[in-house]
Amino acid sequence: SQQGEEDPQALSIQEGENATMNCSYKTSINNLQWYRQNSGRGLVHLILIRSNEREKHSGRLRVTLDTSKKSSSLLITASRAADTASYFCATVSRGANNLFFGTGTRLTVIP
Amino acid sequence: GAGVSQTPSNKVTEKGKYVELRCDPISGHTALYWYRQSLGQGPEFLIYFQGTGAADDSGLPNDRFFAVRPEGSVSTLKIQRTERGDSAVYLCASSLMTAEQYFGPGTRLTVT
Image (tube, rainbow over all chains, first blue to last red; front, side):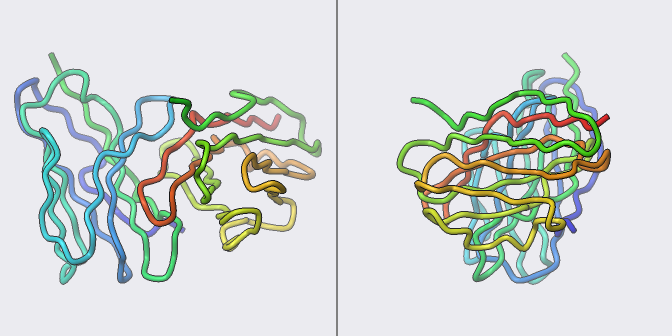
């Protein structure tokens, strides 16, 4: 079974707006990662945040992690039509190596 | 440079048949993973190799599923007596130890 739940399941915004996606998980983690998937294609790694980190930035992406609430958020600023995709959070549990994925958020950016 | 490749990209097979799905990881990546993704869901872990050995096969749904990586590079996922419920996209990923995983484009398996 999948570990994470993402919220919202779908999000539609205008180009230039910010998009925020949330992820909750269940067990203690080593790190949490965000991936992007275009329709019918493989997943692309976006950013990794370790359990002892609280916030991380990469370009237009900002990720936060709250281990006390077992939750993370991904913020995409100044969205573009090309950001349209599904976004998944995935956790690596302590002592493990495989990823447990959430259910994903389908983001649509309207030009 | 070359990423993770998977063949075939699409496979249609009849219920009860045997299929093999191949994964070529990024050169030098010691870790290799197989995941399965059903429509509208996130990928689900199947099996993880470290080198030639299966370090964790806890995600394999039953004994019809088996995977090998005999030389520590290419891996083959084998499914016996396929069922319609096996229809999904099978994803392979590779990585350097506990780092971000690089995914291949997947093999879409359809069991009719």
